[in-house]
Amino acid sequence: MWRALASNMLTVLAVGLFLLAGLLVWGQNQFTASGPLDEPICLRVERGSTMTRVSRELQEDGAVSSATIFRLGAQYSDKTGQLKAGSFLIREGSSMDEIIEQITRAGASTCGTEIVYRIGVTRQTAEVRELDPATQAYVELVEFDPNAEDIPPVYAEKREKSDTRYRISLAEGVTSWQVVEALKAWDALSGEVAEVPAEGMLAPDSYEVVDGAERAALLDQMQSRQRARIDAAWETRQSDLPISTPEEMLILASIIEKETGVPEERGQVASVFVNRLRQGMRLQTDPTVIYGVTKGQGVLGRGLRQSELRRATPWNTYVIEGLPPTPIANPGVASLEAAVNPDETEYVFFVADGSGGHAFAETLEEHNRNVAKWRQIEAEQQSSGN
View (tube, rainbow, N blue to C red):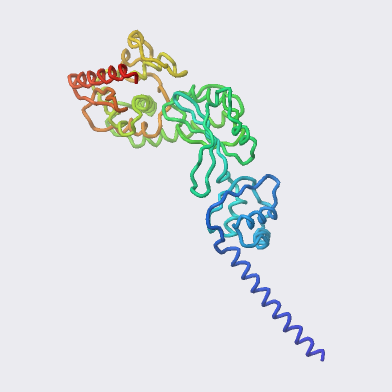
């Protein structure tokens, strides 16, 4: 009898173990298989939230088939205590395993609200935008002047959210003074700036920051990135250039940056200045005169006067020979590359052509004809009120 009972118990135990093993295999397959989500969603994890709460939300949103399996999988992989607060883009078909990895690894939010602070040559703007999970493109909620008295309520609302991300976009051609003044004015940053960085040494780019980031640390990052770009561009320079140091390259690149907003023209503009330097001609470029007037502190906001074109300043290339002593703005990568690899041309003149670009010329006679065309365009624009 006892022998039969023991045999039956062993049979039941074996069957139970077999079923448990099957259940574990099934659960593991459910955990790693593609999930039921048929379109992306943005999952927001509040500070202090738990894996239990998140698992329920995911099941309610149709992102996981079982909150229990999701929670047990997080426990088994020892990631329950690694849950991060933030907003996370959960893509269609994401497995439970992939979702857990997304919400527990260190890093910034991948969806939700982003505040972008743009520092431009003539103005600063702030934009509050939100990622649309379906298109994975940002949708603008509001754009405004951050220096205005009336700030949209949505800005303050989003500033209070712990998962709001922040980004600074630095335009090509801004001066170091403009950058520092803009950073000092933005309330999402903290700390003092001891001095304005050297002109030309801040890399135009997009920088992701955290709320309360130190201004000085951000400026250090911008300078480090620009030094790397300068070194990289200098390594690719042509061998017969009339510039002999990375500093001279940076100065030339800043002039190229301020002379044209048309990317395809940078090589041609660079060739004009290189040809002039080779021939001992003065550069005669208006942006250097403007810098001599403003010292990079703001925008001139009007046309140059004849007296300013004749006035001797260290930057006035109508008066001085060769390059000015410092850059006149912060150039981007394309202008740095153009400075050391200009187009091969015989151009020594250029003037605006009315289309936003320039007309280039090899001779003074040809240049004068281009100037006459530009003067006619200017007159027509003035008479039409444009």
